[in-house]
Amino acid sequence: MPELPELEVVREVLNRRLVGRVIQAVGIAPKGGSIVIRDLTGQGFAETLGGKEIRAVTRRGKFLIFDLAGGLWLAVNPKLMGRFQLCLPEAKKAGPVLVVLRFGQPEQELRYVDAKQMGQLYLTQDLEAIPTFGEMGPDALQIPWDDFKARIGRYRGEVKGILIRADFVAGIGNAYADEILWAAGIHPYRKRASLQADEVERLHRAMRTTLLESVDKVRAEMGEDIHLKPRDFFSVHMRAGQPCPLCGTPISSITANQRITNFCRNCQPGGLIRGMGSARVT
Image 1 (cartoon, one colour):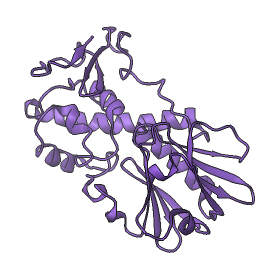
Image 2 (tube, one colour; image 1 turned 90 degrees about the vertical axis):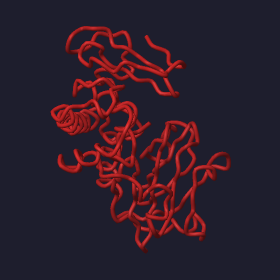
Image 3 (tube, rainbow, N blue to C red; image 1 turned 180 degrees about the horizontal axis):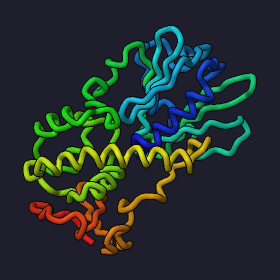
Image 4 (cartoon, rainbow, N blue to C red; image 1 turned 90 degrees about the horizontal axis):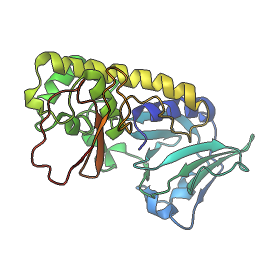
């Protein structure tokens, strides 16, 4: 799933390459294209997008948002497998292409690629009309410490589950939650109520540092190839059995609720797991 660091770099590239350009035509794959499209204007997705100038590309949590001329917005939530590919028309496809925005002079395509067909492309005149959009909390890179401290106190349950809730902070998913919690030295299954004040402050600091450093690493590895998903720099996520970069202890893995969680039992102590009979621990 693309998360904040990847989408932030994609936003930078698209702002640099597409702002001021006009969408000449829109292609929708006959198989799968209509599944991901959400035309909230009721005026036709391709017909309405065609001829519109891109004025800016922004990001809100895990949404990439195209500000279009004429008071329109194209908001894309890539979900599990969605990606973008900015390329020449003859370039090899990075995966199943469901939607294509075509540009002229010079000819170029922005492809939406999604092997699972789970992403959503909303065309709307009102971003608040997008389901759950208005319920998102502050962006994970923008929330100040005082706001973070006040907001986390409203939630119960395990700290990782809170960290990936978009109504708490927007932009963090399963992968970067593992990285943030490892950097903070906090077990993912610790209860929020068990965290001390200094641990909450450490979590906020680790969140900002991890995300900002990851943006730099993704930018360096991705370059202009925005369809790539560079994550070789991860410390614990999907590193089960490998040595922890800090202490050398093998990274643990727990699979529960269709989610893989990786952490270091030495650097992230505590978090006794109860009531997780379906969990697989390695």
